[in-house]
Image (tube, rainbow, N blue to C red; front, side):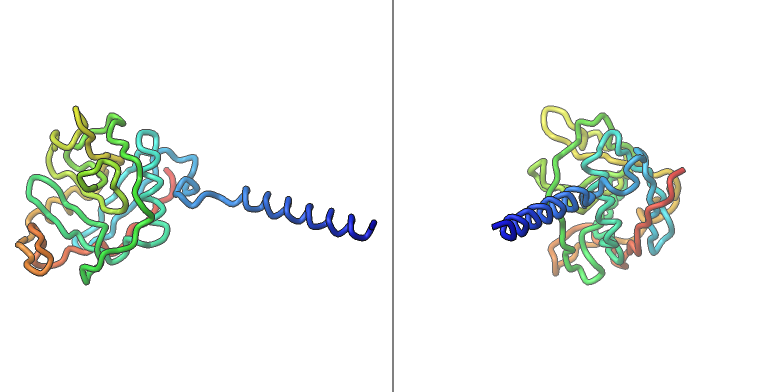
Length: 204
């Protein structure tokens, strides 16, 4: 009987230990990346030059963490900016250079009411008509797009702003675009503009 009680006690302690280890494992939602930095910075290395963006975790924590986990997994490497509309947006992050859609972690809550505006050179999450359908695609505003801000309806979540590389984005707006009959998309660059990688920069 004592032997049985000893074995049961040992199993119980093992289960408690495993539970504690599981509980101590950091979340993989992006909140573990520079957790004390409210304004992490990333460098987007593109085929047309580098862009540095400062993210705003204080206003858009869910969105920033979501973006950072894609960066950490190197999931934006060799993706394309598949939509460039002059005086409007540059959109990317969703397709590789073969126009194959990249996998996502799922949709996130819309944080468009955070006070950040869709102004020139801001970084915003793309989504479908449903307000809570953003996952991995993003766009850079190339005008003050007031129509994308929340009003009576949900807007589009701004979660950062460009701090260096404005001239790179300005050059992107000059690339030739056309309708792509294979995919049925408008405003597709004739020559691909590639996002080679996104790098998380050290805190400043």
